[in-house]
Amino acid sequence: MELESLRALRHGGGFEKSILVQLPLPKHINEEKILSEISIEKDVDGFHPLNIGKLAMKGREPLFVPCTPKGCMELLSRSGVTVKGKRAVVVGRSNIVGLPVSLLLLKADATVSIVHSRTPDPESIVREADIVIAAAGQAMMIKGDWIKPGAAVIDVGTNSVDDPTRKSGYRLVGDVDFAEVSKVAGYLTPVPGGVGPMTVAMLLKNTVDGAKRGIVE
Ligand code: NDP
Image (cartoon, rainbow, N blue to C red):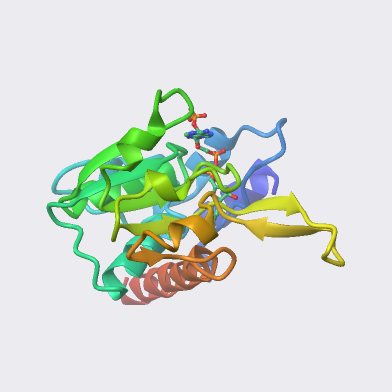
């Protein structure tokens, strides 16, 4: 979308109650500039710097929480996994998944470590975790012997790998080696069918919450 039309949407007093920018943007478009143009009241993706800033600050509440991280927390909560006081390790530190989910876990009183591409010996850090959030975009990187027995493992990764047995020639796998980790973990989300649908549900929830707020105003 052109910046001018985005501004019109932002400032217009029309009926639009939410705006979502499909990321990643093509390289010639400045993502920071585009995301900052979205009114925080309509930022259902929760990526506006003000929403992320409030998420990071103690005692502040963002208007919207990013959908995939929010979905991870919902999965933990609905599965009865205690977060408070637990050791959580997030693999990945991106603006859209790793960083915000780390902030949410911290807000929920977990002790949080973040592993990224420059972390030496990531497996020894992941092995300490009661809760693992895998969001590295590396197919089946996390193996069974990385996981503490009984840990809750949320696999955000969605990676396509060649599969000549499929008509499409590929299949989707997570960042977690499902066959291995399912033997050790207490909880494990599948790919596809785990975090993906929950992300969509959280986007709808954010949209409805935003619309309700708009009506009340
Ligand atoms: P990015 O590529 O933006 O970030 C990946 C992160 O993982 C980076 O912080 C990177 O570190 C880190 N990383 C990469 N390789 C390694 C490694 N070998 N060891 C440790 N850390 C590593 O990806 P996204 O956060 O956007 O997405 C992550 C995955 O989640 C992707 O597979 C994506 O498709 C999927 N996804 C799924 C969604 C869903 O709804 N199910 C929604 C969003 C994403 P560094 O910062 O050092 O480069």
